[in-house]
Length: 499
Image (cartoon, rainbow, N blue to C red; front, top):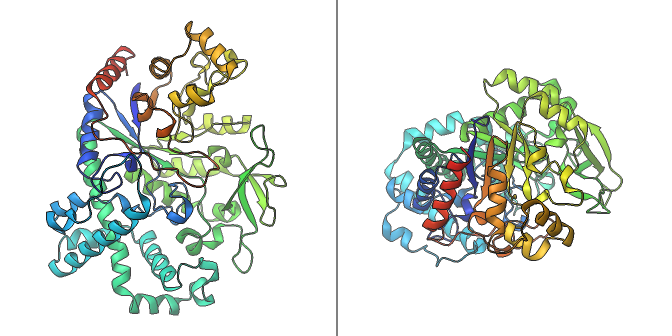
């Protein structure tokens, strides 16, 4: 489908309206899909659906599991449909709608709802066979994920490397003792994952019936304090005590004199290669089961990655290390009949990254908001310079909205270049639709527009400000904001540009 001329909308699940403080997989998600279909849209792109953590700013790109699902997205209304709760139960947890996700409150209320649903599951025996099937089919990651969460609670949230050595090193006797003595807690963690999976599968079926494909997102790196690193320390560069020796990041550039030190563990690619990249094969298989296509974040790290010695406080003294990305993708191509991957190739991209992407015919990303810097006629983000395959966006989750860019960030040079290109000065009233038309009229096969740009919203609707710790990932759509006029205009453009 990525090679078919088509259009879609970027909107994370958390941004949908709901009565419970955060967007979820309930009625508003189905309504949103119906609206997409009615407007002729073929794609719904979301951010990673992995668990988030309040202590880590609720970033979907910073999770304690690369395989698990975010239980905050479990719909109370769907719990009623499946018989786990009734209307009176869920009415107690309603939260007055606001334009921001209230994470502090949502973590508490969703946890209580899951506890109540789990009690009914055990007493009534609801969906026992589907739950058993889920546990069997997902055992490759689910069992270790549940152990990780339960043991972490046992040691008051301590990072796994600081657990008693028998737990840190996964002594079979220690893990068997947890399985024996904490069986109900383990089952509840698996049950929460099942609830998400069950509801997501139902919603995905509805998307398919409406002709809407879902684009997921795979972060390149995983967190050090994660079930993934605890379960498979051999796949990461750690010392004999399983502590990090190197961390990931990017080198200094025009935007940052010190570069970016992300702190994620880096992969031991030699070990990955020795087992035919089995961990990545499992991860990609897992994602292709959930989505029609996936965007791979920080794709350039499959050609070379920036490794920073763990003792360094900045990214300045890192080194580029070669990565066997071509070998890995060859294995993936042999494993899967179709590999619908979008390569996130934004920023400073070297020829080896383009060669890797082009060899496998993965579409890269183009962002029209980036097209007006300096000598803009040569910009790779200007539609006249696109090569296919490509996926074009007006902006991404890390950028300001188009309107916010114009109001707060657009330089004098960018305004001059914009005026030359469109032969009209930018204004609040017209800039978002001009940029949308610019993207939709390009040769890129797929065009994805952030929902905020369709609605012409300002910077208050921005999803993420990189390097800002608090206040991100919280924008929510006001119920009824998808007005008929905006949808009708989007549909007209979709038809005009044969998408």
